[in-house]
Amino acid sequence: MIASESLSSSTNNKQNNNKQLEEGAMELRVATSSSTILSSAQSSTFPSTVENQVTTCENNIMSVMETSNTNQPVRNVLQLSQQHHVLLIFRRFVSYGGCAFCNRRTLELLQFYRSLTQMNIVPVVVYPESKEKGEKFFQSLEVPELVQMLRVADPDSEFASSFQVHTDPFSKKEILTYLLPQLIIAKVEGFSQEIHKRQHYEGKSFDIKPTLFLLREGKIVYEWRLNYADHCTEIINDIVLLLDVNNGVSEKILKEENNDMDHEEKNRSTLSITQETLSMETSLKPSEETLTKLPRDVNESSQALVTLHDDETTTRCVEDNTLSKVQELPPSSSSTHQTSNNESSVEGNLKEQPSSSGSLSETLHMQPAQTEKAIPSSIVDPLPLIQSEYIFVVKDVPKYRRIPSTPLVQVMSAEMKEQEEYEKTERAKRMLQQRVPSHNGSSSSDSHGRHRCNHGPIRISCICSFDSVDVDSTIDLFSVLNDSKKRRYFKLFSHYEYNSENLIFWEEVYVNYKPNAYIGKYEKVKKLAFAICQQFLFDSSSIMYINTKDKLREEVKSNLKRLFCYSNKNEVKLMPWEEQIKFNEQAPLLFDNILNELMTTVLPDMFVRFKMSPLFSEMENHKTHP
Picture (cartoon, rainbow, N blue to C red):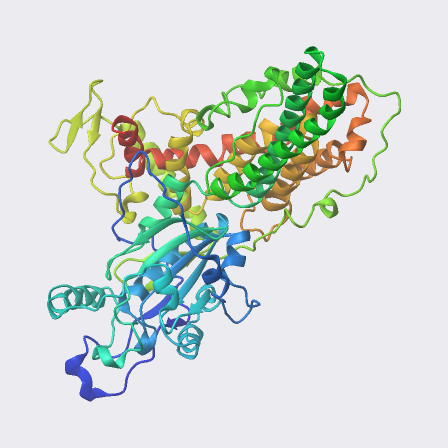
C-alpha cells in the first residue's frame, strides 16, 4: 500500500455531524496489493449506428479557456484541440473536498487514463469556482496524473453557459428523493461529501450537471450529458465502439496527404475543363475577333473554377474534420483492390502472405527509368530523419485499476499483469475445451441451434470474467481482425486488459501502412513507417511500445534505412526501374516478422480470453440484432 491521495481535508468541526453524511471527504489511495476485479459501475449498450451531429462551438470561447497545471505552459482549449482530441469535463464544486460523485467519476476516468492517452485524448477539467480553490484541490492530490491534469477555472459559469451545460437548481423534492439517497450509496463506496446549504457554495457550483464533450479542431464531436450521480465508465466504450478515434499520428499524415490529393485532383479537373472548352471553341472556327478574346475568356473561366475549388476545399476541410477514418483514393485501376475496399475488408485474408501484385501492376504505368542513377541524400540512422511534426512520443503512464466498492485504485506491475493474463488464459482454454451447450432457462437458441446468454448491459466487472458465456465457435481471430466492427469490440477488450498497443500496432500496419506501401506514395509511406517505428518499436518509454524481440526491431531498423534512403520526390523519380519494382515488393513486408510474432503469441491468447468474456457475446448480439 503506498501513500493515499486525499481529495479533501477532513473537517474538525464536530458540531456539523447532523448536517454531514460523513466528516471529511473521500480519499484516493493507490494499492499495490493484488486484485483482479474491475469497477462494478454500470456500462451502456451500443446501437449499431450513431448519428453524430457535429456541433460547432464558438472558437473565441475555446480560445479564452486557458488551461493550467504545475508542469505545462498555459494553452487554451482551442489550441489543444488542433493537436489532440480533447475530453472536456464539466464538474461540480471542488470546495469542501469536492463533489462525491465527481470524485468517483475522476477515479473511474483514472482507470482508463492510459487508454485515453494512447488514443491521443487529453482530459481537461472545467470546475465552477475560482482558480485558487481549484489549485488547492488539485494540489492536494498525490496521483501524478490527477495533479497534472489540465484544468480551467469557470467561477462565473461563462464556459458552462457557452456549452449549454445545465445549471438549474435542485428542488427540495430532488434533494430528498435523489441527491441524499445517492450520497448514501456513494458513501458506502467510500466517497463521502460534506453537506452545506446552497448559499455556502460559490456561484452555480452546486447545481451544475456533469457533462463531457469530445472536441477536435474547435468542434464538438460527441457529448455525454449525465445526471449528478451517474458513472462515466461508458465513455471508453463509446469512444472505441462508436467513434473509433485514431491515435493521432497516422490521422495527421493521412489527412494532410488526402488534402494534397484533393487539391491536385481539383487542379487537374480545372485544367481538363479548360482544355475541353478551348477545343470546343476552336472546332466552331470562330472569327478572328473571337480568337483574340478566347484566351482571356478561358483564363477568366479557369481562374473562377480554381477559386471555386479552393472554396470547396476549405469548406470540406471544415465539414469533414471529424474523427471518421480517412479513405485513401486508389492511384490506378490496377491497385483498386488495395485501397478502395471498405474498412471491413481492407486488410484482406491474414492467412495469406501480403500480395504485392497491385503495387507491381501500378508500377507498370510509370515512366521508364531514367538513365541517371539516383544518389541518396543521406544514408544514416533513420531516427534523426523523422520529422518532428509527425512524431510525438507520449511517455507511458501507470496502469490504474479501481478496487470495487472502495475509493482505491491499484497500480498494476508488469509481473502482476503477466501472471493474471496467464491464469485467465489457462482458465479460458479449459472452459473452451469443456464447453457443452446448456439448455437452461438463462439462454436462448437462435436459428442455427446455438445457445446465447441473454445479457443485459455489460458491467465492467464482467468484461474480463468468464462466467456463463456461450460462444460461436465459427468466429476466429482472423474473422474478427478482418471485420472493422468486430475488431472494435476486440480493441475495447484489449483496453480493459491494458494490451491495446498490440492491436493498435496491427491496425496501423494493416489499415494505414500496407495500403500505401508502394513507390507512388513514397513520401507518405515513409512518414507512416517512421511514425510506427518511433511509437511502437524504437522508444522503450513510449506508451505504445510493444513487447517483441530485439532482433526483430533491428531487422526493421535496417530495412527502414535501406528502403527509405531518399529524401524527396525528385530523388525518387530518378530511381532505376528495377529499384522501384523492388521497393513495391519489399515495402509492404517491412513489419511482417513482428506481425507474425504477434499473431502466434500475444493476440491468440488475448483472443481466447476475449472469446470467453461477455463482451464477445455483445459483439455477436450486435451482429445478429443490428
